[in-house]
Image 1 (cartoon, protein in one colour):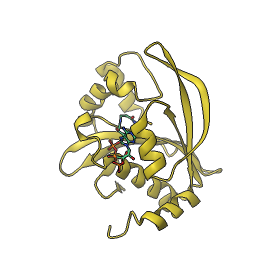
Image 2: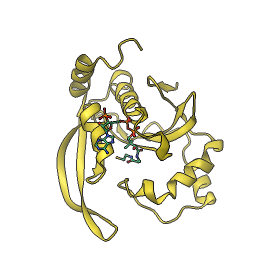
Image 3: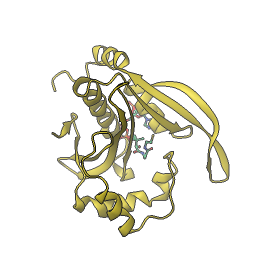
Image 4: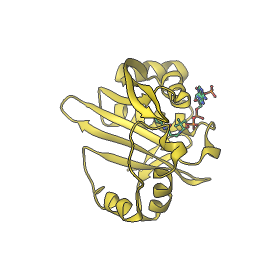
Length: 187
Ligand SMILES: CC(C)(COP(=O)(O)OP(=O)(O)OC[C@H]1O[C@@H](n2cnc3c(N)ncnc32)[C@H](O)[C@@H]1OP(=O)(O)O)[C@@H](O)C(=O)NCCC(=O)NCCS
C-alpha cells in the first residue's frame, strides 16, 4: 500500500528510478548534507543495491513521488524493531530547485503518520549533521522531532570536524503535534 502525504506519495522503488537515484547518490552537494558516505557508485553498484531491496519487513525504502514532478527523492524506514517498536528514518530530496516548497515536511509527516498510526511504533530515530540547517528546521520546527543528544566531532567533511545531532520522536510527540497544528485536517 502506498503512503500518502498531502503533496507526496511514498511508493516502492522501481528499476526506472535507478538512473536518477544513482545521479543523486553521487551528487556532492547532497552528500555533504547527509550523515553517510560512500565512494563513487556505479550503475552496477546501483543495480546490485536494487536487487537486494526485495521485500524485507525490517528495512523499507520508498521513492518520494508527486503528481506534478514524478520522482523527487527517497525516504526510508529501516532497522524496524518489532518488539521494542522503534525504527530509524532518513530522507533526501534530489533536485535543489524543489526544496523549500513543503515536500520535505510533507514526507516526514507522511512517515510519522505511517509509523505511528499504521505500524503502531513507539518511537523513531534519525541523525543529522549539525550544519544541515534545513533538515534541523524540517524535523524539529515542523515535524515534532526533538534533539536528544549531540556527538561531538562525529563527521569529517571539507577538512572540518562536525557534530552529529541525535534526533527522535515518540508517538506522544506526534499526536501532540497534530493536535496542535491540525496537519491532517481537510486531508
Ligand atoms: C532537508 C530537506 C529534506 C528539506 O526539505 P524541503 O522540502 O526543502 O523543506 P520544506 O520546504 O518542506 O520545509 C521548509 C521548512 O524547513 C525549515 N528550513 C528550510 N530551510 C531552512 C534553513 N536554511 N534554515 C533553517 N530552517 C530551514 C524551515 O522550518 C522551513 O519552514 P518555514 O519556511 O515555514 O520557515 C531537503 O532540503 C533535502 O533533501 N536536502 C538534501 C538532503 C538532506 O539534507 N536530507 C536530510 C538529511 S537528515
